[in-house]
Amino acid sequence: MSDNTIILTVVNETWARPDSILDLFLESFRIGQGTKRLLNHLLIIAEDSQAFQYCKSRHPHCFHLKNNSQTKFTRGNLMISPSKLKLLQQVIDLGYNVAFTNADVMWLRNPITKLVPNVGLSISCEIYPFDNETFGIKGDGGFFHVKADGKTYEFIKSCNLRRVLYPDSEHQSLCNVLATDNYSELIGMNVRYLDEVNFGRLCRPGDLSQIYTIQANCCENIDSKIHYLKLVLDDWRNYTTELSAQNDSAKRSPLPWRAPQKCV
Image (cartoon, rainbow, N blue to C red; front, side, top):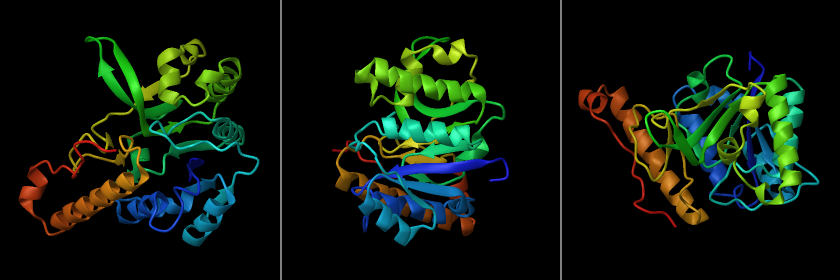
């Protein structure tokens, strides 16, 4: 983009095939408000040759991450696996700001417009309060933006070092790293946690008039994930159709998406 930002996502053969997560992800860009133009700035990283071949049939900007240690997609999707960390570090070193998104995140509006300038790391996490001044972090919301500067580069390097020193941390999310490690504070890196009103989760219905992204992080089963994300896109189409018809009641009333009571 004009500010040197690129959008990155990572898929494997399970997520990149006909009628897959990748298809829904790309569709959300095409039908979202102000998101279709962002497809030209989206680079899809394929973790295997099958995903790479399918990606090329659906999108012009695909990259095969070779010599990659395969990582199973699980409930926590923003995993700091070795390949992703190395890739992220290299891209930042090249001077690119990175908007990193899981492919099971539907882009209904442009989340980059919600970012605050000069914040090193903006990240969507599941936040819960301890009291009026402190809060905890339970998990990730599928999206983060990192600026290319010395502090964020050092932070990503520390994640690589943490993986080597503490092997059990290899597949933690960045939200968990921030919750358990104060290195970002030590190096003076500004961190902003994005509002859950705008960055939602599938199993926690929100207001379509305010939502920017929705992640299916509560669905572990791939078929359930695809099924309910299709419902979300259908609800979004109905919502935008009502708005274009200038339905006043649609403008005044909160309109939630159809979320599962539980997803397996």
